[in-house]
Length: 152
Image (cartoon, rainbow, N blue to C red; front, side):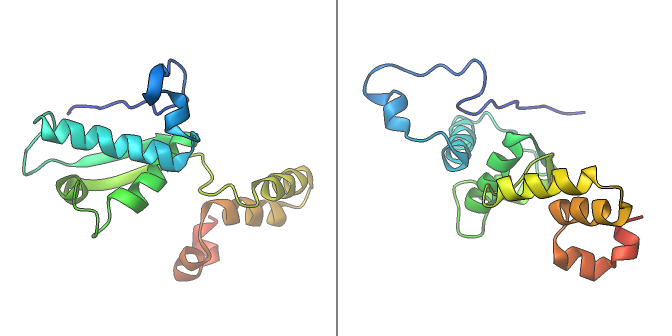
């Protein structure tokens, strides 16, 4: 039992773009970097106004779905690092980051999608398993734990 903070990043439904000099033009491209910065600024804002719990046993679980997972991955890589001190207490309380159903990079996404479609349409189960496995698990993880155990 605990509190939940639901965040809708810019570009999602119900986004209101302010008019004037701080409007959408000033924001630039709506991408994972912008969205990660928005999450970081929101958490810093809440922290500065004592709106985040100060419980020493606080456990934070970040959960990102779809494109939100990409944004959250970018947020973690930029704002929950050793060098990023603005959210050091949030980092120390973070116990999990769950990223559901997302690609971490758009590089080669079209090629990956075409390959996945081709492979999933084929009748060879081993090929399907390898394609799905390569999209979800790193080669290091597979080598460390063994392909047989990972693909059970």
